Length: 589
Image: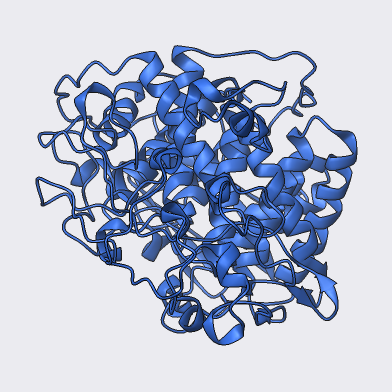
């Protein structure tokens, strides 16, 4: 979808810092990185699999007994280097990846078969050992996760958000297959399953992912089942609130109330897929209640999806962020990333161990890639590539943060905090007992949490603060790599389902080439609305309800205008001056 830039993004307040030329990573280097970071999700597979890091072990499947009220809920991805399935981060990661596939599809390649039989047959787990099978690799990884979400979305009153117990899971440093045999006390079968949490975020993100898959999967049967499950997951999200609390591992208060992004993105993607206007109406209601203020100062991650919601709302509906002085997505992102960048690298919330530094450049690159795609422009391409290249070793320390990626002379991490990587099946071995991975697992492709203050990698496996690898960290990096390759070396594939032509977007708020009304401010007290403009513009005002019906209109206002909304509901307030327009969304209670 290539949209004309909306008014709210017409004038960029984002001034790019001077770029320092980055090392010449080749197109093939980016292909290698995309291949590795995508295949990492195959190393996270729970259930029947196959999981390629378990090839050659005695236990190649795991947690086949996962069930909730007698229903099979096996499968899905492990969230990090452990074997618990935390849907809180998994839902976020799966939507980011599905969205990446939908928007940057030509940048994702077909380099291996989704069941990894090509690697087993060739006994070569490098890129050369893979064979194409007519399906893009990311699609096959996404299908594995989507099929789990279909199982998890049991009904509007039952949705699986967590599988396993973190404390029991962390007792033994063994593979997932081996852990399954150890019994519940040591993280094995049968595992505890959470299927009735008061959680609107996780099922919302899963619904958004499934709605995208229902639009882009080339198989019609898959599209049907994914759409049905997306609607079930959304119905659960609408009747619940908050986020599942997994004490000590994922605390619900980390979200700081930012849970409504889940159902918002679900309704947005269900609208894009079905074209049913009811989802757009519901999306607008969710959007108004997002936590824009708290989401505007911290980077994109599983507990702050507000920056992604802002980009998607503007890209799909031309809705501006409802937060203070932020009147477009670019300004919103600039506050989080560009204003805090160091030499063009997004480092506003980075540093030593425990800060999970890599989330900043990876997430920022992904968000700017989306902005670039939606508005069909390339002014951010250099900074996107620069941040991705930094993570791949183009930095003063030549540190690659991707396990196994050593292109361009980069030093890759060798001690990831990931149980499957070491293929250990001896419950008596400790995490820091000198375990070494099989040769084939050295190309794990996981993005470690990182330490931007140290010149070398930590070799201590138990140091999760630096060496943890997680699906939520890999996902935006995969997306950004897909964008880069979609521009540098796009690939087309035969017999892929083409998405239906997008319906024309509402461009009533789009006036190309005009200046916004930066001096215009809206104040609300209950149902009383006051507009002020210190620039002396003469402006007209129109107020519309969610059905698009104009309920009020005023002409020739200057400096200040006040009016009352007689009925409860959500309204659009459109302010028009000569060669300028601005829209607010307000809610009358």
